[in-house]
Amino acid sequence: MPSSTPASAMSDRAVEIGQAPAQEQVYRPWRAIARKFFSYKASVVSLVILILIVLFAFAGGPLWKYSYAVSTSDLSAPPSWEHPFGTDHLGYDLMAGVMRGTQRSLSIAGTVAVLATLIGSIWGAVAGYVGGWADSLLMRIVDLIMIFPLLAVAAFLARQSQGGEHGWLLVALVLATLSWTVLARVVRSVVLSLRTREFVIAAKIAGAGPVRIIFRHLLPNTVGPIIVAATVLVASAILSETALSYLGFGVQPPDTSLGLLINQAQGAISTRPWLFYFPGLFIILIALCVAFIGDGLRAALDPKQQRK
Amino acid sequence: MLAYLVRRLLVMIPMMLIASFLMFVVISFSGDPLAGLKTMQPPPPPEVLHAMAVKLRLDQPLLDRYWMWLSGLFVGDFGPSIHNIDIGAELVKRLGVSLRLLALGIVLAFLMAVAASVIGAVLQFSWADHIISFVAVAMISMPVFWLALQLKRLAISINQELGFRLLYTSGDGAGMTASTPWDRVLLLIGVLALPTIALSMQAFGTWSRYGRVALIDALNSEYVKLARAKGLSETRVVLAHGLRTSLAPMLTVVAAGGAVILGESVVTETVFQWRGMGDLLVTGIQNNDVYVVLGWLLVAGLIIMVFNLIADILYAVLDPRIRYER
Figure 1 (tube, chains in turn purple, orange):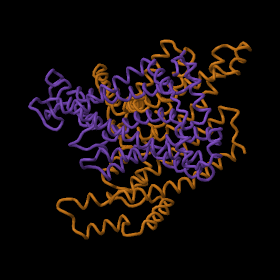
Figure 2 (figure 1 turned 90 degrees about the vertical axis):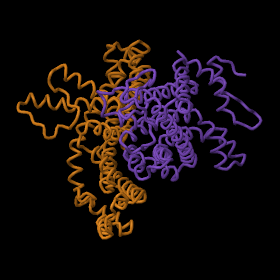
Figure 3 (figure 1 turned 135 degrees about the horizontal axis):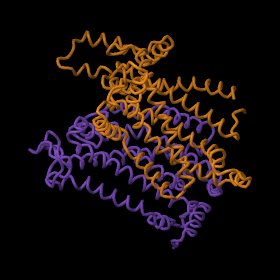
Figure 4 (figure 1 turned 120 degrees about the vertical axis):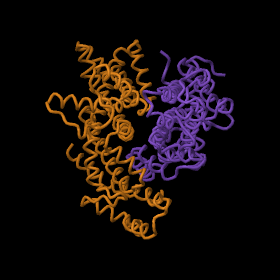
């Protein structure tokens, strides 16, 4: 059982990387990492707020008395007990809209993060481990994708495939196919430093094939950088999705997202400012929380970084 | 250095060719440019649809279409447009408008990021450092269109306080004239101020975080200890020895952010209703005008490649260890 002192957390990590993760020797440095993470106040507070936002978005919709899709008779009402976030000029309750929008934005960001992390990690690991011309080819493809502004390409592709009940999923797929490149670069650089290590050579001598080495030996040892890069991905996916929806190429009405709510509210900046405070506040809160959680994870997963 | 420059410029040609081909294929397969026309009510006669398809070269095989487009580019023909836009001329005009915003935004973001990193690194863990770090994270988390809308709101009340229109909340200044040189400067500031600030904030946040870490690393290194031991003033140590080397890793981040800031300029221009590259792209996508989108992406790809090249050159200038000769 690892103790909570940073020094032992460091040696846990060293043991984990230094020795081959053999089947019978199950070593779990995660407890020490979790303890370290929970010692960062900002990260813990962010985690709590993010969980509350997720609950608000996914459980709030069915519980709240108004629906995002049904208008009420209160037109342009400022925030009150009846409508905590106010209503728009057609009488739609904004809190219901924000719940639905947050749900959509979070679903998209989550899907993007999972898909892009999967594609990017495997891509980067293969490039880094195989090396040679395959590495050059794979990484040039990454360079090519990164030449183009993600937002512009995503806007075009999302516009081509938009609409329908699963419109949000298409937006997520488009963003995922364009944003995995960062992960590929991160994972490749870690794998490059790992491929000549003893445990990989040992596995190779023991007769493990490249697929087994990549999935059983290399990828598990890049989990730290992958998790950190994935949190950055969540934050940037939230911002990309809201920007797309703001431009009118993302989630389409009658469905809604946080970006679309702001788009619809921008004509009323000075007359109904609440319409665009609340959706904006939620975007910023989510992105901020994810960023602070990422900082905590980075510190907890990096054995070199010690608390001052 | 010159050999390196020539080599880099030569590498850009095949890169751009492959990129343009990929782009062309992806965009051709992603949908029917006439879909909007076909679903119109009442539906246009088949002859019109056919004529449009011929005009957009949809009757030709994909490779022929690509070749026609590519060879057209060399004589300034960016391809046919659904709405009869002269794409080449339009791109040049719009680029002039947008480059002002992009260049100013990047410079402002970079200067603020450098200033913030110096304060953050020199006064590490002080209250100033904490505040700057928090502002940086907040700026990274803030959607550019939301910040832009807030600035517009703020500008409206500033203008009301002043009693005249100092800050323009829409338009890129085209068609507005000023009689005296002073008025012209005021107009230029009024038009550019809000979009530039809105565009630069997110980049400032990202770059300052990297800059701070890079400068802290540099200030803890042996050569800075030596510089201090020699008795150099602290200002000189930080600026001439620490900052100079920490700018190099920062430039890598700046270069990598080129595509992001270009994407954000589209959003910024949309909020401030500029008739620049952003508007060209947005209306192009709305009208499904594929050759407009293709031309736009081509120009964007070129801008980003040149941007990366400049960053690499500055990298060599800043860090004497980096030599590009083989």
